[in-house]
Image 1 (cartoon, one colour):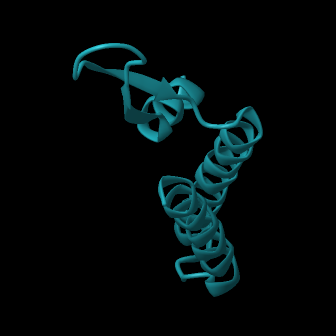
Image 2 (cartoon, rainbow, N blue to C red):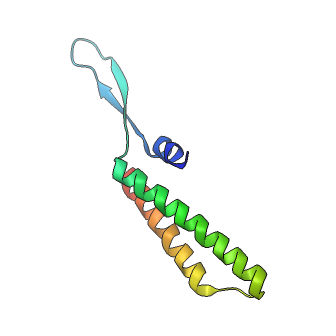
Image 3 (spheres, rainbow, N blue to C red):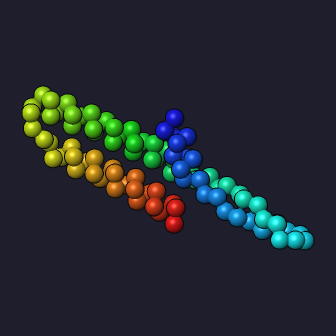
Length: 88
């Protein structure tokens, strides 16, 4: 399910002129590479796991764990960098 959402979000649509007479054009959709989709899906799953870990840590120990939060920010940066890198 996450993979389908990411694939739809990262698919590029380009306008291609038709070969032949006239000024007709058509739209072509270029899907993102499968490796990118798999890595972003894994990063999303890891982010959710760290989020659950942070929530449990806060509930059990009544304090914030900065190391888990740092891991979450690292994964968020990876995801955003990958998305903006593909869209450029």
